[in-house]
Picture 1: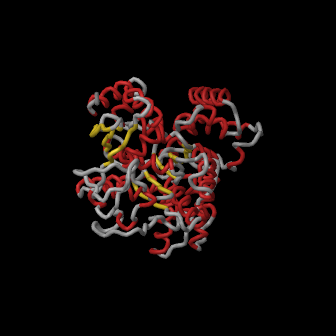
Picture 2: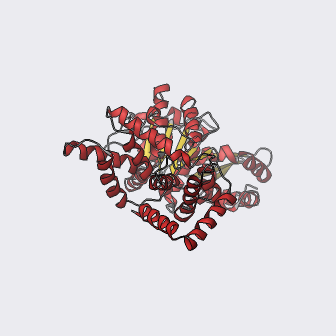
Picture 3: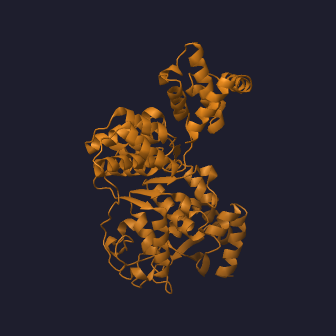
Length: 478
């Protein structure tokens, strides 16, 4: 007796449900509808071509076993794939039987897989142009000045930069796919992401590279839903060879956007296309992300950009001045690098302010002018006092050369300055004792603790020393 298609599929689902995670079952099998059963061939309707591809890629073995269990050794499965009506020009072709001349629409699905490589690219809507205009050309949206040449390498960014360069040499085919670059604001995530994209375009002119801000991606998706062309939106992004998504943390809590990005991500990754993401947090700290998406962020490499050290900050400023053909006294560059240490963007902004003040008022760039501008700039921005800055203030107070603090000399005045630098570093920064010791003559954490106790004892017993501490503390808070 011929079994009804609904009953057969219901039996299949019971088996499938026992063999895969519940969330996977809900995502990939609940939306399926059985539509026909004829000659031991069960036809099921799936929502999209991507759905079909995903089932074939990940669950084909389970589906074959289940169908044969229910229908016997001659049992077969066919898919009825819903096509978007926007593709009315497309001529469908069948998976298991001859091509039909019927048009494929939501109300009239036909059994077929959709091969993107055979699609008509002219019919895919580009969300970066005026709605209604369809063309294949994709502008990369990359900023030419954000190149590797202008990205200064240091200990703070060496891993991420090296991975980025490797990707540019062989996009989509390294172990760094996806590459997730994360850091606090203003440390160069966007610059590095652009640099990778620019280098890919330089090495592979035929590859399609696209940089997009996540909020822009979200707005495009909302527009596609409003205009009922989600398939165009998805297909457009699936054509990209190197996709760079900036500030991916903004999709947190947006379930529909995460779902569509999940499909795009899978298609790109499975086809060896490169994905580059930036975030203000590492993957483990991203809240409001679907576990299936978060797990994919961990497939490749998550590399952080740390706060650059003094030498790197000075090199960044010198490189910028050199590119602009501007000369500036080294002491001014050094003071700026000391004063603003946790945000490269703010540091470069302060540099521009100094140059503007000098040009508009026809004043020479001096340390005094720099102090006026930078102190005002720093007061108007949130600044975390750095170990480097503390060392400079302490050395300036005692008229000592900066390198003295990191020397091995046991002269009383230098030992005292070193202890004060450790004391204020513990008081004003969030660095560990080990980190403080490393920056103060490569000492261990026990030495830092001893220095802090010594300073506290002298403050209580030595009036002159107490004045030193109070005056230095005021200078640090200016």
